[in-house]
Amino acid sequence: MPLLEVNDLHIGLQTQRGPAEAVRGISFSLERGETLGIVGESGCGKSITVMSLMGLLPSTAKVTGSIKLDGQELVGLPEKQLCQLRGNRIGMIFQEPMTALNPVHTIARQVGEPLMLHRGLTKAQARKEALDLLDRVGIPDAASRLDAYPHQFSGGQRQRIGIAMALACGPDLLIADEPTTALDVTIQKQVLDLIQGLVAEMGMALILISHDLGVIASSVQRMLVMYGGSAVESGPTETVFADRAHPYTRGLFAARPALGAVRAGRLPTIRGSVPELVDIPRGCGFAGRCDFTTDACHTTKPPVARQPNGHAVSCLHLDAVAAHATLAAA
Image (cartoon, rainbow, N blue to C red; front, side):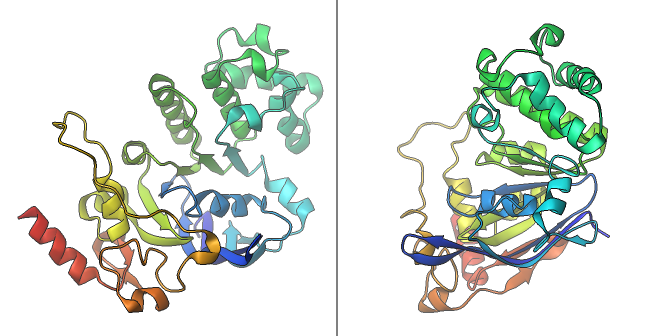
């Protein structure tokens, strides 16, 4: 049995322009120790998908489908039982550590809180464990900084503290939502190396959200490309990088600057922008921005086409896309 099974997940939200579907039939699974990356532009549904795993959606959100952790259904689970899972069996590293950490509580209290809540440790025991965790994630001179506050740490150190909090109870599943967005390149690599090392050491499953295709390439075994609340392409990371069967995936890769390439004008871009939730077409969410758009794309939801090696793509015009790619490469 997989550790995590998400099947036909739909999430509806109330917007100023009326109800809208933010996630549209996402399905994936994750084994223990496996790593999955989720990519896509801002507004494609990445963060709200993982927030649903934690039960952190707005109270007005309507969720259908299934989310199972070790066979336990999480959709519709009472808040009290969800609280027993958050920070215990599911840990999360949030995108911006300064807003994820409480500015009026010390680091010792914040890192130690899940240990007292879920493992029943005393305050003194939790403080000792918090020190061990801070040492483990590389906070310098951690013993003298336990009673410091978040603003007294650098951005990279705050993210390391967030990692310590997420790992405190040894979760089965770790979710990292853009964990390096606010960090410079050198610190980004340190934080990613730290996450990868701890995931491998503790045998956790990892879901990593990132806009950076380079990060995905070096960090996860499988990847899922999202657009308009749907998974448009998924599979082993190497396979998706090599084949890039969906027009949206091809657009993301084309817009990526290549290291060492001779500068020759502007980078290719995907025309248009991600539409508001209420404006996403009923069929393929990418319809209108895609060069292969036909009338059917606006009204017909593309079926999932299973490719070799666990590669899956949702597009009505795969043959045309493949033929165009062959001509372009010739």
